[in-house]
Length: 395
Image (cartoon, rainbow, N blue to C red; front, side, top):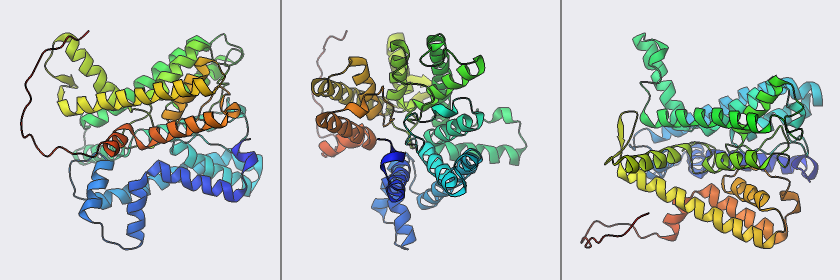
């Protein structure tokens, strides 16, 4: 049963509230409630906000939270207005407006839950309005709130100093440069690979005109960044294409955004750290900047923990579920990245299979580092002594 068929209007409202809550994050929502109740934001709560947005200062955090809320509702409102041009003529004013609001929030929060039916956005595979609006919401939500403010900051600076727009990227902070570059690379490379691998596949884009093939490939590349909508059959994908999508789902979006996955910046830091070791360099470097070793270790921890969860969940699901291994891996990767895509395995999951997927989604959403800290709450209280070193063999 689909969301549209199974849930009443009240149930859909509850689901939408949970989507918005999950997209904004527990810290942002909690802070918003405290502000509405005119409660004082304590130092502990400010530190939580700082950690949630990966910031280096405690100043202006409440103001930043308000900016996140305002920016979120503004973008979701614009998305709903654009969706309304499609849904209101098709479903009538009240039903169409509700669908427009629901899908805008779902897309921005990278939830991928729709009210269309069994085939998600397949009926709109040729619609530029639906595709471009949905992809824009997915990318804007998944790129991360810090990147928003950094771009706005640089734009204001360019206007004030009357500089050329070509200086925009150069004046961005390192985090924004990495997040934007990685996002563009993954979207473009994913589009090219899906387009080439699925070009003659009649189960997906094989029968489409060239323009629709490109649009569908682009949408597939974007939606696997933890969004969950689809315009082509997921179980119709060739094994090679499905594996590409698995990689995209595992990486996901960017930090401090609405997307899941290990995050783009994590993947980039892990990659450049590996390259640095291979080249014999003492430091990981990118855009003429050195990456602190602490970030490299954290990237390694996030990746290893997520990979461990993926391996265990895939093993467990393969034990309790009779299905092809690729479909199981696709399901668990989608779950840990909180994507919502499936190769038609979700409807046939057993009770134990559903439990495995639920736990995997939960672990993927709260974040591997958060879980690791919860399971190992002992914090370093400073070096008391240093253990002696000894050599081991690597490789």
